Image (cartoon, rainbow, N blue to C red; front, side, top):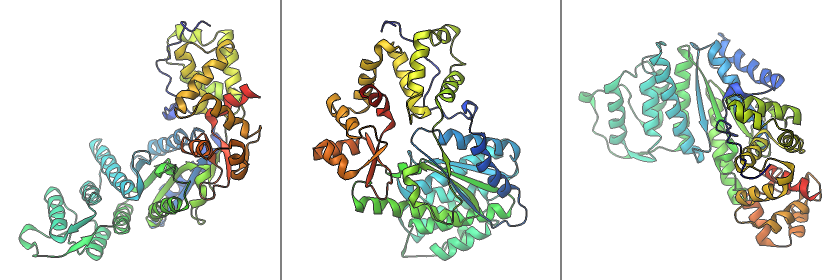
Length: 427
């Protein structure tokens, strides 16, 4: 195929997470759906909680998988649950994630109210108050009461009994004061993450008591700071952030956590056994692509069905260890540049990889790939020795050309899936 004959894929987004695009995974979906449904529909113990993790390699489809289960639950139990979805790629650290939980909770409650669902009268205003408090690190007591009064003017918080108790205990904050009873106060309160977490948990307790179960989905947990495994002190800081966030497990909610497999060592041992998503076989990867091409024009679909293109799709999809995202990414990029054919394979793959790893030269990428000598993983010592340069080893880690098998104990490394086509070319 000449390079001028590009294929304009206008609807193919490799990172799209629309649940309608999910292929296969029925058995894994049932493993997540069943305990969540039991949690939602159990009328006996309103104080119960549930924590479950979904793990898998980067790009394997964790987000779309989990969203498909949540979509089904919303359709079946729209009057019983509120779902809160927070992506760690947009919220860095424990504090920002707590703000994200409060913000998404408020927006979801407003959405439910807009379609006529009856909510506890305090629900939206309480979520709004906590979202505002999450922006403060350290506040004068008078400022805290101003926040509370602003919220009280808009609605009633009297029904949020658990939240009132915790706010009074943690911040000496009365959520039922009026303008005429405002106290003359001095001093300050530290609005740390522990206090915010306890207040958020209290609000979820109130919502559960009033018949509204919450499912909190924390996506891409490993992205809290995914490049901080290099130094021990950085790993310790990340662990403290994540363990702080996991204190939400104490709330009467269903907490669903998505993370790369290498991050799983931080999960509480009391949590259910993680649901691990394995890479899909090549035939299913091609089914994933066909599903995502359904919105393309007939002319584009015809271009994607030529023998040359089909041959290249088979080659890309059968690379051992490739994930749906990486497969779709290479298909999209090569189609856009008109190089989706065996004749253009090598120069096209190299060009894409140089864009993916801008601080590494072609020879350096090849050296990184050859360091593994066809093995799935090698020790840090062997990798450093094969690369022969501290600079190249550090760049390989910083640009995620190599990834630790275990984030918390980075002694073994694997090759990033983006380099799998180059490995095949060098074999």
